[in-house]
Length: 291
Length: 159
Length: 148
Image (cartoon, rainbow over all chains, first blue to last red; front, side, top):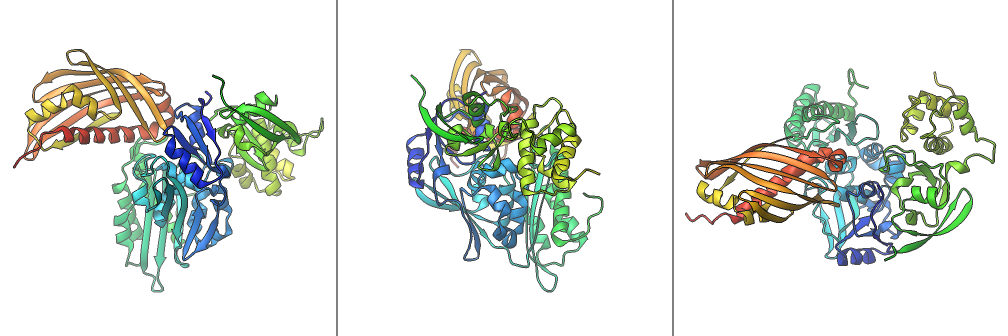
C-alpha cells in the first residue's frame, strides 16, 4: 500500500512547528520517519498533515554540560553511535544505539523520535531509563521536563500533547569509574529486542557497590527498573551468587506478552538470564556457555 | 480537487532532476516512476528488507522510508549509477564472479550497501562483512555467496 | 488470547448490574465507542474508534449480551472489523458480592486478526488490557456514590 494523502509542512523553526501542530489536530510530527512511515505505508496511520521537523536548525547536538550529556532531539541515532564524547563519557549509550535497527535506520532515526515513540522494546527508552535521563519537551504550553518513569507510560503512550516535541535529552554522566553494559536478545541482529537489559554499577575502592541501576526492555508496556535487584546489590560486594539472586527479581517483575517471536514465559526467563549476563559483562566476569 | 504538488530538485547518479510531485510519494517510487530508474526495488515497504537501499548524500537509507520531498536538494546514488557505462564496478564484478546474484531482487540493495560499507571499511574481516551486510535480506543465496562477493571485492576471502 | 481478570466496584451487585448493562453506559464506557444502537433485545450494532498514538482505526460490528441471569452473570460477545483488521471475542462475566462491594470477574478469549495483528502483535494484549482498564474505570464513574 502507499500512504494516504496528507498536507506537508516543512517549518524552519521550532515555534512554527509547534504552531502548526497546535492548530491542526490531524497533524503529526515527522522526524526520522523510521517508525511513522512504515505505519503510513500500511495505512495504519493516516495523519491528515505532517510536520517535517528535519529543516529545523539547532536541534541536533551532543555536548557535555554541567555534568550531563546533553543531546538534541533531532540528533540522528548514528551520530550518537559514533560520537567519541558519548563513547568516552557514557559508553552504555553508545553500546545501546548499536543495536537499533540497521545502519540505514540509524542514519535517519532521531533520538527525539525514538523517545517520543515510546516503544517498550526499543533500545533507547530502555537505556535512558537505566541512565535516569531527563526528557525535555517544548510545545504550545511551553517547556516541560520528565523523568523516564513519568514519560514512558505504556505502549507508544507518553504525556506528550499534540504540539509537544522532544527537544532534548539530558543524561547525568555516570561516574568515571562506573561499569555498565547493554545486552539484548533478538532473533536477528537489528530486530526489536525480545528482551533488553541495561546495567550501570558504581563500585567503590573497597569493592562495594554504591549504586546499581538495572533496566529491562521488552518485558512490559514500558521499560522497567528492577528496583528490588538494585536494592539487593547496593551496599554489597558483588559476588556471582549475589548477582544470581538479583537476576531472579527480573523474572518476577517482568510482565511480558507472547507473540510469534517469543512466548511470555521465554521472555520472563530471558529477563533473568540476560540480567545475569549483563551484570557479569559490566563487571568483566567470565561467562560460561554464551556467545 | 487536485492534490497539492511540491517542487523538488534532486541529483541522481550525477544528473539533476526537477519534478512536481505529491508529498506522499515515497523516495523509492519517485526514483522508479518519476525518474524511470527501476533498479531500486521495492520489497516490504516498511523498512525491513533493505532492497530499496540507496545512498543519499553518501549514506545508505531505506528509500521506502522517506518521502521524496524530504530528499529535496539531495545527492543520490542508485544501482544504475554504480557501473561505469558498460564496465562493471569491482563490487559488481565480484558479485558476478562469486555468485552473489541469484534472482537479483535484493542485488541493488546489496551492492549499494557493500559500496558504502567498503568505502568506510576497505579491509574488513568476515565477521565485519556479515554485520555490515546484515541490513539487506536475501531469500536465494543463503548469504555466504554475498559475503564471498564482498570479501572478494575487498581483496580478502572467506575461510 | 485469553482475557481474564477482576475489577472491584464499590457498589452492590444489583446496582453494578444495572449500571453495566445499561446500553448508554456501555457506549460511554467502551473506549472509542462512537455508536451502540440496539437492534434487538441484547443485540447492538457498534462503531468503535480504537488506536494508540498515530495508529487509529474504525471498527464496525456487533455487541451481544446473552445468557443473562440478573444480577449474577452474563455473557458478552463482540466482533468488529475495519481497515486495520478484525477482532472477535467473548467473555463470561460474573458479579460476586464481596466485603467492599462487588467483584466483577471476567473470563474470556479474544481473537485479533488482519494487518494490525500482523504488524503490532506484541502490543495487542497490552492494548486490550489498557482498554479493559479504561472500560472499568469509566464504568466506576457511573456507579452510584456510596454513602456510609
